[in-house]
Amino acid sequence: MRKLCITSGCKGGVGKSTLACLLAYALSQEGFSVVLLDLGGGDSGTLCLGGTPSGRGLTGREHGYWEGLRESPLSSGLRVAYAAPSSSWEELHLEAIRDAEVAIVDTAPCSQHCKEALFDLRIFVALPNWLSWHAYRRWVEKPEDRTQGDSSLLVINMYHPLLGDWKRRYAVLARRVATLSYDPALAFIYTRDVAEAYLVLSGRTKRDLRDLLDAVKSLLQGAHNSDSRGGVSLPGR
Image (cartoon, rainbow, N blue to C red; front, top):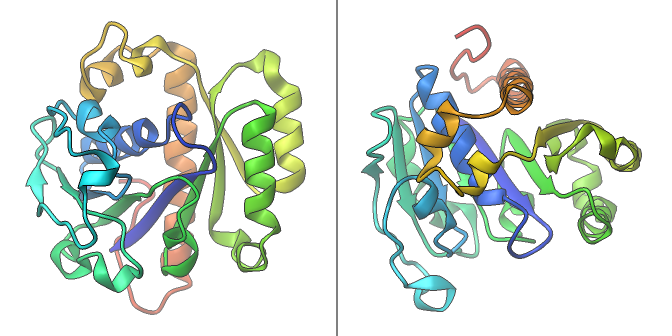
């Protein structure tokens, strides 16, 4: 099993949970067995996957909360679980998802789980603005993050080619940078869930998503090749 962590430096509006759901859904559509573990505590992921918000929110999800795995109604290859953030990766019910080929963990912003746990790939989601830039700079300036550059990917969300200066700014800090263009379909203005959005993405966003998926699979495969534990062959699926 390959383990992927997604986090951000800002609370709300970055599109972290939307991106986590989009990647999980897209990989499941390519035939992979995917588990999405939502530790964020909000309802964004629930809405993206066609569910009804629980209303429980951050304050209502107690330490140790665990709903168990459920198959997503959007894809037979995608299972979803919601859990409260806990102090260590060992408490996050890894045993329950070991049969998946890819596990995507959607953490709360500024979460410590991406640094403390052993992940094959860590994705930091940012926006093309100064608030996100400063949050990412704080993230990479921490010693524990500098040592894990080979397993990290920065994704600039809601991007546009006219914002190339921001991509260059981030590239000074990040070893690997990917972009995902702004798309009303992913704002769920006229789409109800990530499956509908996936079908009507603009040409530019589809190209960005394809490049992002290729980068993710390549990095996960690189982790597999350097890891004697074994795993699934991802590229070319």
